[in-house]
Image (cartoon, rainbow, N blue to C red; front, side, top):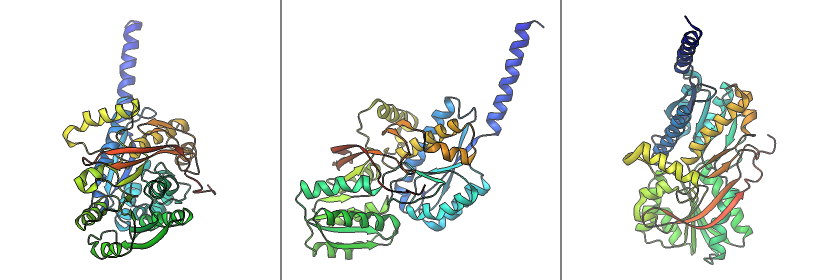
Length: 384
């Protein structure tokens, strides 16, 4: 056997061994997400973004030569479902990381399980802020980044002085509106009503009646992402409410699902599909190619999921392993250039983000009114 043949056989053997290792030892990413319940409207888009990220990364050689593998579990959009989903993913599936968008109730229920299992958790949802754990990193927006653009526009451009607040009765809804109330009062505005409905509630009639008699000249809502946004907006339109309307929880995908009812709503988001950048155009083209007619509109909940998986990849590569403590140390030091721009979770486990104030159009698209580059998340977790 000559030298060239020996080298070829050696390379083939090495390739077979590498293929076997690739197949047997994937890096598992757990995604507990609300496939049922309040988040079921937006969850499919989140899963699609995760699938694209994993497909791209695996096609490029994986992470440290290992394939990524998704493990998806339905958390039913709430605490009880999240406990079951996290327990299954962490202790039965033995995932290497949790990367997901969830309701705050689900996140809070899952955190103790993550801590017990010593698994890194990248939370990809916008939320009410100040969820702090050594195991948790966040790449979605917080109130300090999202509320001011909406309030300032209503006060300065619409001349609004009396605000009515409506939310879902859980951590996100109350946390967002608590921040909004404080910010409004500092801006010299008055809150003339503040009402809540349970997260699974669908009948907003009594609250809308209070809104009508309140004398409010602007409305701000903070409901659970997905179904509550749809039911509330539909009933507001049916009741003839035409006040300036700022929604602190609706994403572009959910807005599209509402149809004409969403037209005119103001939102502040870290992602809109109209971002004019090569990275966003490449992402949208890849999503369209992969999912075609089944594509769910990419949005401010699904795009951070895509970037979250790339942030985990960068952290594992920086750490040189999937060891949890090493990855957690690296997560605050890495960045990813994605559809939203360059994102890093380096501010007390949170991310500075460019924010867009937009207004929903008749077709569900979002017209950008103002852009706010690199908005700091403020004080979130000073002891981390």
